Image (cartoon, rainbow, N blue to C red; front, side, top):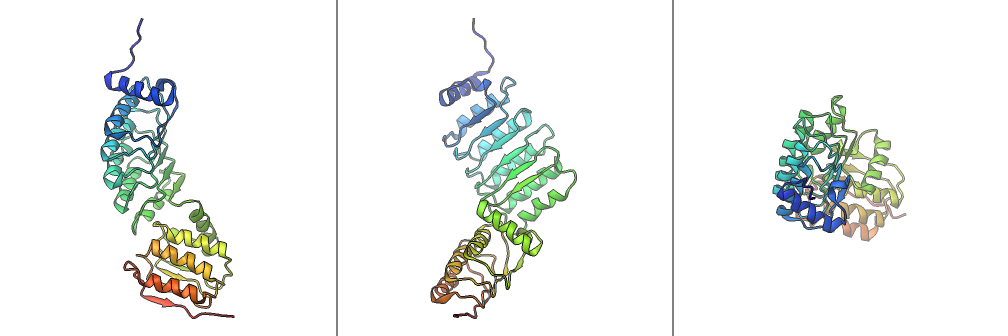
Length: 297
């Protein structure tokens, strides 16, 4: 006797996945296909399986699978038809804003019950952030965790989503923008200035004795695209040539925001000044004011 549960596309996906994970996908609650280059055809098949009522997956991990905008269309259909799926990780795929907009339509749908969405390193820009914010305003009750680490929010992306945390209707509890080092720096700086550094345009840390570890943390924060500080004052902070190297490396990685920099009263040395000179040669550098009165004692 043969029991048939699935349609042709879902059955083909079921056989394909059984070959990868060694188990019947209909019996799984978590499916990890990260690193497998699936292509749109496989994603469409997997989507057909996930839409079937016999599939009870609640966690789907598709990191670095070569997903595209078309893949997002297939996954969006899943999100509106499969109430058991609670966690989706599609990080490290080149989804871009066009892919996010496909997901936006699903996230706005009241049938979507997804709770955790990870979109780190997906080439998402300000437009994509706005699309996600719009979706969560339209349907605020389900998503509790959103990871956007490694993307580029532009000038308003961080604020668009951070404002949602103040909305009592929005259940979002964890909004992740930063990697571990930058996040630690964010907490450290917030303890000093009393505000979220990602929402600041001007940061003044003058007079604080910063060891190299603190400077490296701050550099990790300034390097991240989510940080849009354009005026930075770090005079008399005991910054050394090593600290200056970390800061200038950060500015070279994220040069377009900074227009004013004060590093006076620090022991930068000749090597530190050479690093600053190289920064000024960066064609993307928008620095308008630089203050570097040095201390050699």
